[in-house]
Length: 293
Image 1 (cartoon, one colour):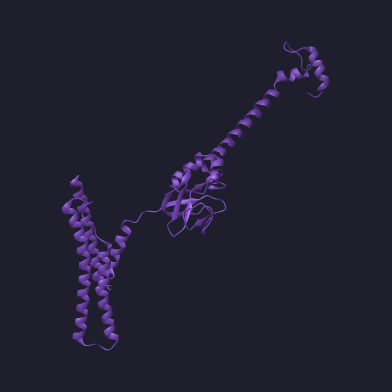
Image 2 (cartoon, rainbow, N blue to C red):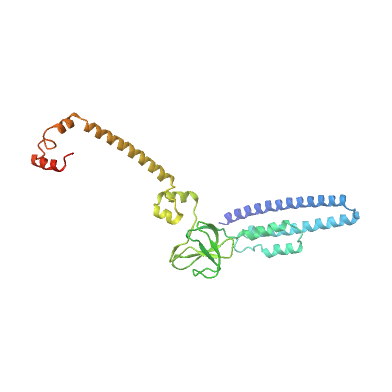
């Protein structure tokens, strides 16, 4: 177990070292840019005292190096302590306040802001994606509640939005905190389902093709059943089969009606009641009722 932790921490150390090298390269680019700007300033303006300019550039370079070194030392100290102890739970963590102190001491160093951004976004939760299904839209509440009070916005029907926090409520209701704002919505209530969690597109299309019209229209709106490619192809195949079967049936009926046995039977004097299976009296009575049969 400790071996796996050591390997993991060594990987983190490698990543941090690469990040420090990238920061140092960016710092060097910043120095080159500042040097080019100073050259242009000296060419366009009155030259200043040479000794004074050299002292200023050396002081600025030393401040930049000191700030970058302070941030690098904090990062490396954090990683090395984890490698030595092999216990991530007990090892001291790199505090954001330490980096902020460096930034306050050296506000001119822009590269340290990237380190702060990395630390702030390291433990940030990943958003989940939801979709509004209520036909008339859904009000955004200022607090996690079902009552229509404290309305601060509106979600449109079919709108897909990101959720920062999912807080369970009563009777299966889940309150959803919006990612890009302070508002709240909820998944369902006694009136019905307002929002559902969005899955990947392939699963959604497969679900549409499998479900019937009522469920598809309930969750995805009108046209979900009719626009399914698999059902359209099946309808076209059924139509082709029906046309072929009907044409074959018509051909058989025409061939049977023009046969010699059928024609001779119709031309006989007894009409439709010759043979051993029909009674003559029944045929006479029916001929009066249906003379053109």
